[in-house]
Length: 524
Ligand code: V55
Ligand code: FE
Image (cartoon, rainbow, N blue to C red; front, side, top):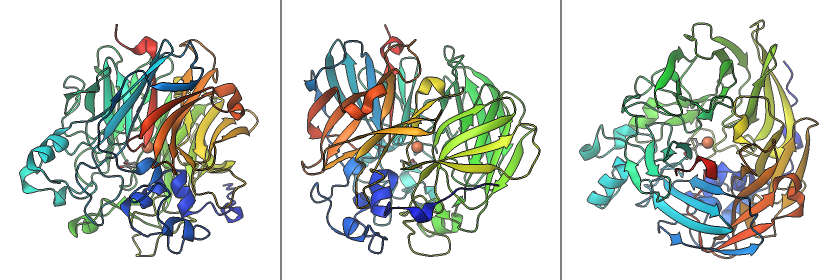
């Protein structure tokens, strides 16, 4: 097994940074001084965030629902840009209980609807059962991240869905996703909630967990998804299924068993295979019973990469072993008939320093730095370990691709990251466009004081080639009390900077993931 892991050459991409770089930033909004001993980043997290008290970049609370028609735009909005940039993130209705983490909180969805040179901005909470019940009670009823033991008796057994992680469009709906629950369905135009527990018309049980990272098949447009802990809390069964894009019918479903119960946040699908990467962010029932979160990091845990034939019964699943690592987000996958390739961001240790370590050790910020790697295995199943190689020196825990290439070979990846040469960076100063054909990348660096959230790629039209289109994402101005812009770049020339900037007079609600919905996929 090859592992060109040069984490030791890191240039202070630490907590603070890996953090601001992506998910770790979370630490900021919990108010916990977790970074006191962060190598190289200590002072950065210890001092109050630049946006003012309580601010934490892309994870700062907002709560106010906003409607702004015909936003101010600087530069020139491309005339061919037609669609919606959607995003979601946890924006707690009520203050978080001490010990709770920033991955908890009600999903607040937003859209920048762009058409005919005009942008309308709108945000609404995903009003799931949890939101509605808490609104009635006037207090938090689900006080701990993914811990049903802590739920108020009045809501026991009711949907815990928050829709705070990612979204996907299905027919005329925007589905707000959290991996422990069925989606919450929102109207694509108004963002009003139309279904608190969306089951694709009864295709899924109302208790079915549903990943935050479904894939859209590049050839059929159908949706591939899975749910882990599929048969109840702590279950080692993962259900995998494909949903018809028009009828919403389940075309097939397979149940597989995983080597152990860990967080399976994302996966990979090609035209022929389904792939999972099992990492030792393991379920911790004892910790939950003590009032803690769902997970703790097992630094002794091995990783397993598994694949099976798409649409089959899953009995052919083959597992390959690897060292302790974590990988949360898939950038892209493909198979060449001989091997399967799975491009993912990889950390050497616990990727979320705000989640406990099983052995009680303090947060390891260096181990949380995430770099893009490629995992590969032979399709004929020979061998027992997977190969892994590092692709890029960019600290990028939220890598993306052109979503039209979810299930086929792809060339370009995109991500927000700190500048690789700026050791003391505390924010995602850059957007990167990666060209996998020669492992090169291009960067655009934002002005000082800006932290960039995860970008999305928008093709110029449904039929334009890969990489021909726009890269866009939200810029949080750390020195303007987090006021936000949407920056829009020519994806082929990101180094030239934004061609248009949508100026909001307010902060955006927290963002985890975003999605571009092309205008031709809108109703009507
Ligand atoms: C992630 C985010 C989550 C979660 C599990 O992106 C993993 C990683 C916002 O919630 O619950
Ligand atoms: Fe995610």
